[in-house]
Amino acid sequence: MRQLYLNQKVWSVREKFAVLDHQDRPVYQAVGSLFKIPKHFDILDLHDHIVATVTKQPFSWLPRFYLKIGDQQVATIQKRFTFFKPRYDLVAAGLTVTGDFWDMNFDVSRKGQLVGRVAKRWFSIGDKYEMTIQDSADELLIVGLVIAIDYVKRVEAAAASSSTSN
Image (tube, rainbow, N blue to C red):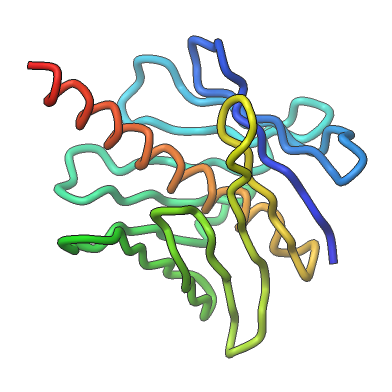
């Protein structure tokens, strides 16, 4: 089991995240594209090699993301239409996501076995997420999932605040 923390870097033109271990040592970094269609996030290792990519499908009614690890697409993350609380489907190797996406507290399971747990840390500058991952083989999958859902939440919050200021 491994504890990782995804920290959003605050004053950045491009969306940037640092992924740290429990001793605050860097493990990965994620960098969002700037003015590109489709929007994507590259997840880089400590040597700045791209190890995974989260890509938003352009022009879709509900947000949909594709997660590639190496050259292989391993997951699709799709927001579902709901009236109150947001729901997401994760299509990947029999994984199920349950919990509260609005508060960013959820579990990821495979065949009933816990694969990972995500919990948002509320009292921090920028967004910070604690990820408890049972197997290191699922690290990039959990990191990509959190980045995609965080991006959708930020875009929706920005749209809501701009529509209320009119």
